[in-house]
Image (cartoon, rainbow, N blue to C red; front, side, top):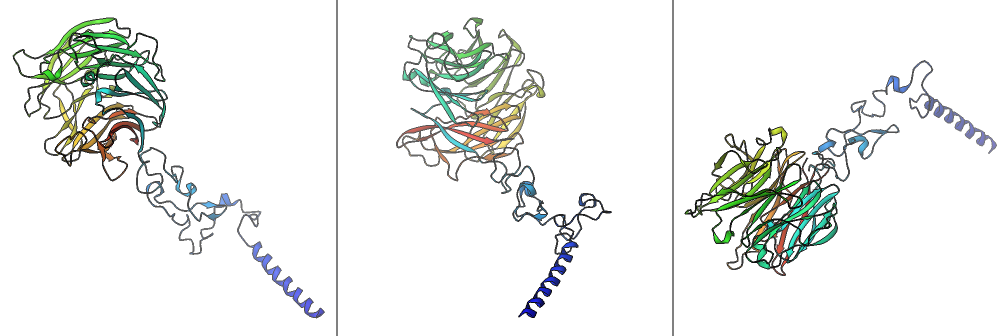
Length: 506
C-alpha cells in the first residue's frame, strides 16, 4: 500500500507539471503577461485565430441574433475576452433599445418597425358632440392647454404635460347663455404677448347681437383678473354670427373677422374685420373686407385668417353659390391698418376643398410669399395638396394620397421641423336611414415632413365617430413628437370622448 501511494503521487506530480506547462504557453492576458520583448496585446493586436475554432473565419465576432434596423450587420462584442452569448447594446451600438422609446426616424429595437407606436389616451369627456368651433389647443412651455366649451356658461381649460397626460382642469365662465349659441359660437386659444388667452364669440343673451370676447389666462390655464366673461373686442347687431380670429405677428393685437348675418339665413354677403389691442381698445375700426353683390344668391363660407410676419393679415373666403363645383376661393392681403395690399386673387378649389391657410416660414420667402394653402382634392384619387405662391400663379403640389371613398378631415401646422399634416380618414359605411349622426367610422393618419403617411390607429378596427368630428387639433411636442386631438363618440349610451394621440414625426 505504501508503494502504491508513492506511485500515485508520482503520477499526480507529472500530470500537474504538464498542465502548468500548457498554461505557461497560453496567450491569455489573464493567465500570463506578454513576453518582455513583445509589447502589449493592445499594441500587437489579438491573434487572428484567437477564440475562433473555425480558424479565424469570423475574427470580428459571430453575427448577432437581430438583423433589422440599427442591428443590421452587428457582430458579437467581446466581454472580458468572451463574445456575448446574447447580443446587447455592446454589440448593436448606442442607438439600440430593447424596448423602443425614441422618436429618431430609425428602428431602435430592430423589430422591422420604425419608431415608437402612437400613444392614445382619453383627455376629457364632453357633454355633447363638439364641432371645431367649440374646441381648441395651444402649446405652452411645459405642455399643452386644451379648451372645450360643451355646456352653457362654462369653458373647461385642461392642462396636459408634454406626454399629453392631463394634469389639471379649470372651469372658466363664458357669456354663452343659450343652447342655440353653440351653432355659430367660435372659440380659440391664443398665444398673446402677455401669455395664453381664450377668444370666443357668442350671442350672450342681448337681443340681436353677437360679441367677441378675450379672457387672459396664466400658463396653467387659470383665468386672470378681468371682466366676467372676458374683455369685449367687438359687438355686432345680429345674433348667432360666426367669426374667426388671429393674433398679429408680435402677439399684441387681435384681428377678428365676422359675417354680417347668420349663415343659416343664406344672407351672409359681407365679411367685416377689426383690430383691437389685448385690452379691447380699438386699433382699426370695423370695416368691410369682402362683399357679394346684393342681387347674388351666393353666400360667404369657409373663412380663414392668417397673420403675416410683417404685421399684416391674409384672409381667405369662399363665395358659394350652391353649385357642385365648390364655389370660388378668394384671397386678399391686408396691412396693419386693414388696408388692401395688391389685388384680390381667386381660384376654383373644387368641391369640398376645405382650404386652410398656413405660413411656411422665412425659408419659403418674404412675409407675403411664404403664405400657402392646404386643401383637399376629391377628384380622381383623393389627395391633400399644398398651394404655394398664392399671389404669383398659385402652383399646387400633392402632399399625399388619402384613402379612396373616404373623407379626409385634416389639420395642418407649420413646426420647427417643417409642415405637419394629420387627418381622420372617415367613412359612413352603414347608414341607418334615420339618425345618421353616429354612423361614421374613421382612422387617424399623420404625415411626417419626409412625406410618408402613416396610419396611427391603435387597432385594426376603425373607431366610432360623430358627424361633428370633422376636425383634428395638432400641436408640436419636444423631441420629434407630435400631439393630436380627435373626438370619438358612441350612440348607446351616448358618449363623446376627446382623445389625445402622441405620435412620432421626425
